[in-house]
Structures are given as structure tokens and as C-alpha cells.
Image (cartoon, rainbow, N blue to C red; front, side):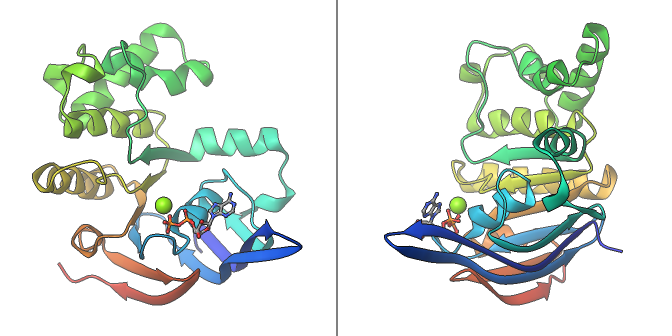
Length: 229
Ligand SMILES: Nc1ncnc2c1ncn2[C@@H]1O[C@H](COP(=O)(O)OP(=O)(O)O)[C@@H](O)[C@H]1O
Ligand SMILES: [Mg+2]
């Protein structure tokens, strides 16, 4: 059965007296261990869909089953727990704390989940090694390149051993060379650490690193394709 299952998901925002539909009848299944790109032009609804998948927002109608649990039936505390245990996020702008070392940035999610100090440091260092930043653990964000900062953000997303990583335009602020490196890292996390990866992009060249591309146009899925590597 699927790790993620969307049934007739719609999302609209209030507009004047009525509603502006953004997502229209999205039906989608993603299995544990997949590496999926959600691709579409700017404004097509990718981030709206990602926010629903990541339990940061709720659909206007339809059903979302995450790990067989119906998201609609959960309290906000239960949702927060699910986000902590199941999901790591990576964003375009890295979202690191400045004047705070890489290792301390990576420790943050564990501060919230109550892991003790020694264990936090051990896990954060391991995650930074996993993303190739062994030599940069005690650098602050302004001492790191964009690609290195994004690696720190990815380490922070994997450190709780969350099985799912959501990445919204993670290469949007990076040049081509760094983008390719970051996409290779996602492939490695998918293959070696068995993380399910769902990555949003408007760029075909980036989407091609995934094993499956879901094309979204004007709030609807137009094509769902497998990628041959
Ligand atoms: N909170 C909101 N209120 C009203 N409209 C929104 C809101 N968030 C997004 N939209 C609109 O929904 C559409 C899709 O946005 P988004 O999901 O961010 O697209 P993408 O990530 O594909 O660029 C856009 O037209 C955007 O203006
Ligand atoms: Mg977006």
C-alpha cells in the first residue's frame, strides 16, 4: 500500500464573494522509497500541493492518507508529532539560523523532540558527514557557499531519521554546478538511506534526477511519468 495517498484533493482560496480554485481533483499515490519530482510552471500550485503533503496546510476537500492515517481526523498536536517523526523539509532559501554553526543548526529539530545533548551532537555530526560536510561542521552559514548551506539544511531534514523529505525548489538559489551536486545528494539519500523524496521544481533538468515526474499544470496533474536513467 502507499505511503502517501491523495483522493480528489481540492484547494481553493477565498476571492471576493467566491473562491479561487488552486488544486483541482488531485489523485496521487506515492510508495515508500520513491524519488518523485513535482514539476510545473510558476503559479501552477506546486507549493500549495507540497504544503498539503507536508501537513503544513489542509485541503479544502478530498482525503489525504499519510502512512495509512487520515490526516483530517488528527488534532494539531497529532499532526505536529507526525511532522516531527515522518517529515523533513528543505526550502529554496536554506532557512538556517545565522551566527549559529552548521552542527547547531542541524541539532535544532532534536531540541524540539527532546533528544539529550550528547546524542544530539552525535546524530548531527553523522548527518553532516552523510551530506559530505565533515570538514565544515563548525562553520557558520555566512562562511559556507550556497551549496554547502543547502547541504546543512538537508542534514537538518534527515537528522531525525524522518522517512520522507519534502524539498520545495531546493536548487532555486544555486548555480548549475551546485544544483547538480545537490541533486546527486538527493539521489544518494534515496538509494543509500532509503528516504522517500518528493521534490518540487519548475525546471525539467532538475526533475530528471528523480525516478518519476508528476507534471502539474493549472492545479491539475497532466502527466505522471517514469524516468529512465
Ligand atoms: N494564501 C493564498 N491566498 C490566495 N492565493 C494563493 C495563496 N497561496 C497561493 N495562492 C495562489 O495559488 C496559485 C498557486 O501558488 P503556488 O502553489 O505557490 O504555485 P507554485 O509553487 O507552483 O509557483 C498562485 O496563483 C498563487 O497566487
Ligand atoms: Mg512554489
